[in-house]
Length: 305
Image 1: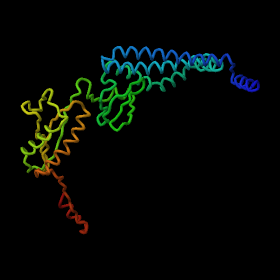
Image 2: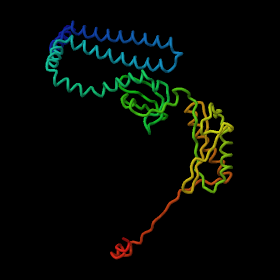
Image 3: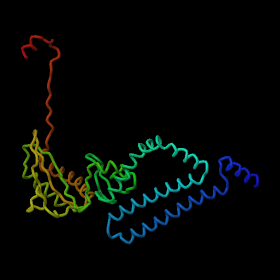
Image 4: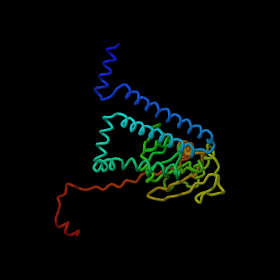
């Protein structure tokens, strides 16, 4: 036993450390953990008291909790470096010639600092909150905001995957927030029919199927595109090559229900159109045939010019 203790002591001395120094490092780690836990419990208690305020408080709580955890790790590392003499002298040596080092660290930390500042702006101005359903970017995936920390925001998509996006990108991109004010969602459901289709009959069938869906809700406030005299509005929105596009405006309680209702009505309207002989539009293909067996005649090219 004494031999093992002596061996451990020799290893510590070879690293420039002794038992007292090791105890100091352990004390720093324990103190950082205790302080982080105390602040965490204080934040959680404060959030529990103001939980009725909704997603804004949850967003601040998550952001500050992650920020405190990161700050305590940084402070613990700095304290450990200052405690170990060899590391402290190395740190002083590096900072003594801090000209080039500051430039290198500045470039390396530029992106991280931008993410942190963007995270603060997101929490302060609240373009989205934890629990909101958003779409990030023009063609980004829809999902629910799961967490916001100093560097990035985590979005849980419909595929149960976590989409991690830096805060600086989110602050500069276009955000579609489906739940920031009212979760009621107007879903656009479109069908392309042949130009010779019976438009009035098709509209009537679409309205009938929408009214039968159990998750449809009445329009909370008719928009400029909807008819306030109809429970479900259907409009002819486009006429193009051999086809017409009918759009139905259907409301649901939230975006998830609206998306599910959209898929249900796709199937229901398809089946009723087939039963009633409503023709769908077929794509028009134009084929150009070239006779490659005939030799090129330069005179023909000059004549064409």
